[in-house]
Image 1 (spheres, helix red, strand yellow):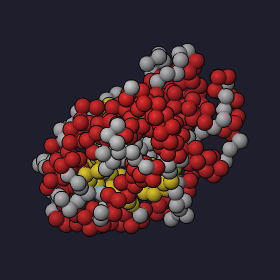
Image 2 (tube, helix red, strand yellow):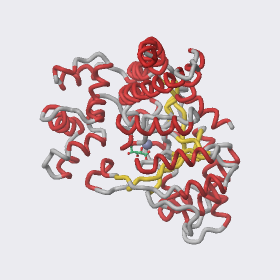
Image 3 (cartoon, helix red, strand yellow):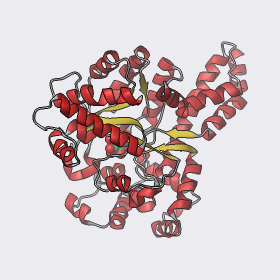
Image 4 (cartoon, rainbow, N blue to C red):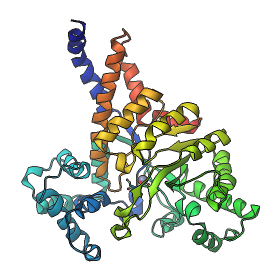
Length: 419
Ligand code: FIX
Ligand code: ZN
């Protein structure tokens, strides 16, 4: 009898939670999108959706043409091949395929016609400005964090020239080349006027790296620094990566009050012929992150990890260190099955003090499906959790649920940044 009552009283309550989760504005804390001032760097539209590297990797499960032949094709021709292989020759049930259809459907296009030319025609009539507004609205975004690299030869000149910024876009300073390819990055820094030495690294070199970081932090108004790391990342270690982190990145972050985001678990170029689609993943030794959090309590760290097998350990680590904020179901973990599993782990171990998702969108339109799919899963989990509370007699009120969801969708992250 008790169970039946609980079940029936759950229905209106579930609708309310779902409604709050589906409509609360989101701060998307890691994307590869750009302020429209970066012109062609902001990707959008059906062809970019179809040549997304997630779909390139999936299409090569079916395609039998040589890789180079594929890369020599124009973008629309690549998109045609992917559409044929993944949407027409087989049903598009993978998460990345489904995402394209969720997006088109949300935009009001009739996907059942399977008419790619008609979809192209629809996009051809849009301008980036109106389309950006539409995507932001459909995804329910408040802010979009970019991934900004001073080492990108197309991006850097835009910053150097100066731009009129769209205040929905905020910057994150990406420093992979600095930490992971020092031997090629040091000469670049030297060319840009920083007195660094590639072979030996005296204190002057670290000071100059800090000057470089300070210049770019100011120029782009960076809100955090970030790096993706190989699965075998260790800290501390007797290598230049470790020294640069300890002697330049961490002091810089302390001085400017910025978090340092670590994204370990990538195996870059597992199949280089797939280019951007060729990266893999591996288990990381999270002892490195523990050493950072424990050794540098004045620093703030953010982390997301690629291996499913690291997720529980990461939650436990976040319980130990309040200078660690964990976020997102990254890349290969952004599939419904793992978003559900990882979010449950986090909620059950951390309550509401984490950021369950970021989109990692590379193409503007993707924010629509990535957020719609994630919001649905997060809603379902919260309905269950608030229902379980209700069984104890603790009924979360509407303002309390709204507060909680705001925290999950960027509030907790922003508080962490301001700490
Ligand atoms: O390193 C990263 O930030 C990754 O998210 C990307 O480089 C990756 O290619 C991606 O798009 C994952 O979603
Ligand atoms: Zn990313």
